[in-house]
Amino acid sequence: MDILLVNAPVKSVTRQASLALPLGLAYIASVLLENGYDVSAIDFNASSFDLVRARRVLENESPQVLGISSVTRTYLSGLKLAQIAKQVNPDIKVVMGGPHVTVMYEEVMREKSIDVVVRGEGEYAMLELANYLIRNKGSLAKINGVVYKEEGLIKKTPERPFIENPDELPFPARELFPIPLYEIPGQVIMSRGGCPFNCHFCAVNNIWKGGRRYRSPENVLKEILYILNNFQLEEISFADDTFTLNREHVIRLCSLLKNVGKDFSWRWRCATRVDLVDEGLLMKMYEAGCYSIQFGVEAGSQKILDSTGKGITLGQVRDAVSKAISVGMEVVCFFMFPHPEDTEVTIREQKQFMKELVKMGVETTISSTTLYPGTYYYKNKDELGVKILADNWDEYDAGHLSIATRYLSEERLKDLLDDMIQDVRSAS
Image (cartoon, rainbow, N blue to C red; front, side, top):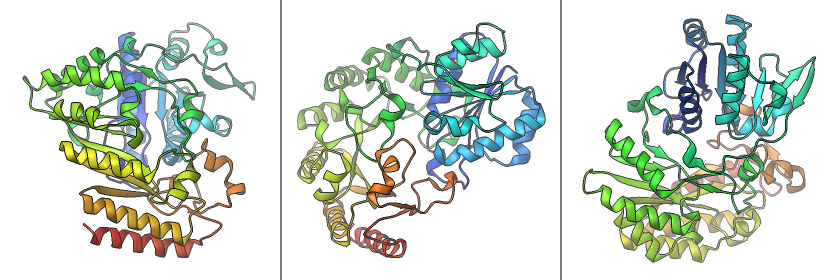
């Protein structure tokens, strides 16, 4: 086996962790396969994980290179996999990538079990690493976008230029993953890269830095048809955080998708911002098969919305939600709790706003605000008066209260959250 790609698991199994296959790893795998490498992949969030099984897998696969993808909450389990790999065979080269290690690469490279960190986009960086580590081609120092150790010193190469034309990439190697085990197996991305917005809770611009790069609607359609033909799926979900960022691309894609319905019974969903939709665009999306849309609202108090850098108003939320419902879509609105500037007054305002949306027919969800490395919140936590309650990276999961604020203690926040959940639930 040349390369084993692994999606590091969460500490505690959750439904959310195994919703969708890891597209990033699937893209890396497809590039490696296209270049003649023997590649295997395991998503430990979709299948069972324990240290005994991980060791057995590494012994059986015997890879020359182990590539580990991790986010903040799976970073520590990724380290355990790296340590097991070195115990099985010290000659295995361990490469780690993902958003957490992109930001925290110096901390990561102090770990003895990690040989290389890939920062940012991984497809071509991993290909060049494979060429160097397996085929003895090139030089590690000339591979852009990596961090490695040399004679005990941490070496960082220049930033890797971003892939300007995503159409050049082969489709993700979904066949390497257990499609039936995912609730959302048919994920597709429309674009990749940075974001023109600067929400204080998001690290995307710290990780990507570059501008947004779009796939052509024709290329996206080709992948959708490939999925429908080869995996017998009835639903596509666009993985983009802001699907409608480029209005013209969406309109063009919708015109292409309308014809797909003649040959397949399928539908799709997406997520975006409330200030990037209008009734005309929503109608085109609905007519092209979009049955559900998700909006990141984040806060139900205008004062708090303003403090997050989100750049939207509650009026825009009401307007977008109303128009999406009127054209026939299901609507989901995402909220966070708490924000650094929250008080009991603003939390009551959020609760009332969530109840208002529920009565309109909206499904609301709430996640715990988590200070991920690279975010404004994380970098300015002391100035903001935020206390991190999480003891280690495993607990950065957005699933339980992980911060206290200057205005509200942990105990009071727990009471307010329980009250909000119960009150909003009773409004449905």
